[in-house]
Length: 154
Image (cartoon, rainbow, N blue to C red):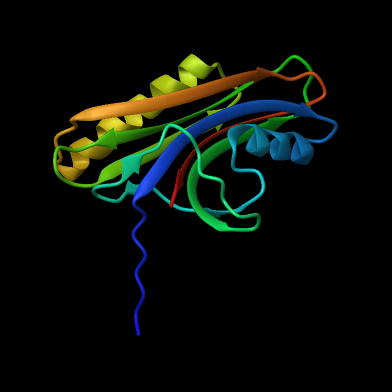
């Protein structure tokens, strides 16, 4: 028996947080983004056809496996600016493409890079890019900082 799961919904979330350690800062980011009490199952870059965007997250059961494409950055360098962005390119009648970027940069730089990657991905697939949605976040590190930008699917 073969089981293939195709998600029908998605949400785009971003968050930045500070902690005593980079891992606890990352955990805070996930909580602020609404995906902190689940197990993220990292996926690559395809949004299934017909997937509907939800503005408000779902109340996932604790420990649920949630397919998620995400970019994250952590730093313990005081004063450093870190950012993450994630975006989805939408075709007219086919699947979407998800791209993400995170690192030591501004939210605008991360956003711009994601937009360029989406445009490139559609070009080499020979698909017409109908629309694009990108969200970005930045955080100035105090002790241990983290940022995350994610597309969660269910």
